[in-house]
Amino acid sequence: MNQGTDRPAWLQGFRQDYQAVFVEPWSAYTGAVLLVIIMAVLIGSGLFWGVFGGLKLWGDYLNNAIGLGSVLGIKEQLESPLMHRISLTNITLLLGAFSAAMLSRQFHINRPPALEYVWAIVGGTLMGIGAVLAGGCTTGGFFVPLTFSSASGWAMWVGLLVGALIGLKLLLWTMENITWGMTPATVWPARLKKWYPWFGAMVGLFVLLWALNWWHSGEDKKAVRALLVIAGFAIGFVLHRSRFCFSRVFREPFMTAEGEMTKAMILAIALGAPVGAALISYGTIDPYLAIPARFWLGSLLGGLVFGIGMVFAGGCASGSLWRVGEGHLKLVVAVIFFAWSGSTAGAIIHNFGLLTPDIDIDFLDGIAEITGLGFEAFMPDLLGGWEYSLLLTYVLLVVWYIFIRYNESTSKFTVF
Image (cartoon, rainbow, N blue to C red; front, side):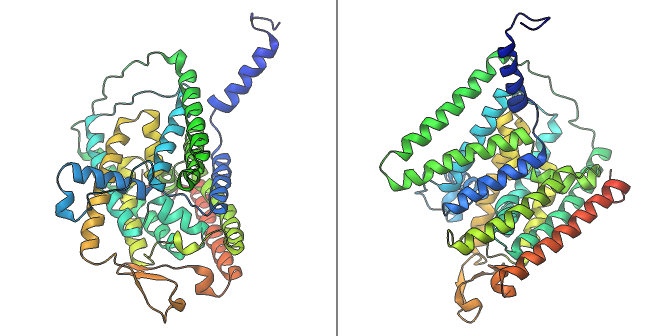
């Protein structure tokens, strides 16, 4: 027995292990490495991670429910949210984050001041518009394209950097000039907190049984989606435990000069790009399936609008989802308006013909899709090989790292 406790030593050891894995925060670098591993498993299975497509489907359902679907030209018969690949990943991402929040006893209903709900509406709406323009959010328009060596990811990167800077300046102005709605809301007490770990474990068990049921269903579509159930849950769990957020990647250097999350993102891309290159070269997936036809105009403008929006919302697409799983009501509002505006803006822009795909047989041998906002820019095809594509990727990552490290030391580019 240990001194000062009536618990056996072996039980104390298990409690310490539980604390280290499920309660103490993981480093952002751990989160980055685990995300790359999950991405590699998905790519190796012919799949890839996305967020916006699922949110847009939810928005399509919302628009149909409020009577705007017919006006916008949204079809009445929509795919089931549980069968839609990206929607399913979003749902299980939420469950993974909720499970992690429960296991760590960090779940609580967070009620922000009234003004922050307005910011959530503005931010969510702008993120939806930006994601439509860029062909994806910070996941599908930035991170995944860079893993697939697409220049559209770098174009959105530029837009996100500028957008985050503009967003922070606008946010600072509102904080200095608007006093309405800043009174903190009453904190709701957390009840049943001692039972939270049991709730979290039950959610994890439910997801495991769900995946096993689909895997052994005998239906090919469900068997494929069984992997997405596990992957989505794992992504949500990792994001919560490591507090990994794409919004912080672009916001924090300009806000506080803190660059830890940004350097973790640089690590994720540095690891993910060669892994993606190897798996694509092996033929596990067609890279053009994951590359938005938005280079460069759509990616740049989309990143700019999305960057402003995510600063006001307080999270990106995946970051908003895992914070919803943690109990943040502001992010619930942001996700609703993100989904609604993504559906609405997508329908409007599509009706103008800007998203209508086309193929030019004289351009990249007719394998790249072209829209009114850009084309599918796969760098190995554009630059003549993987070596040039990866070289450019690492040069840009080094430049980004130097900028972040310099800013950490000098705070020269902070706006607060």
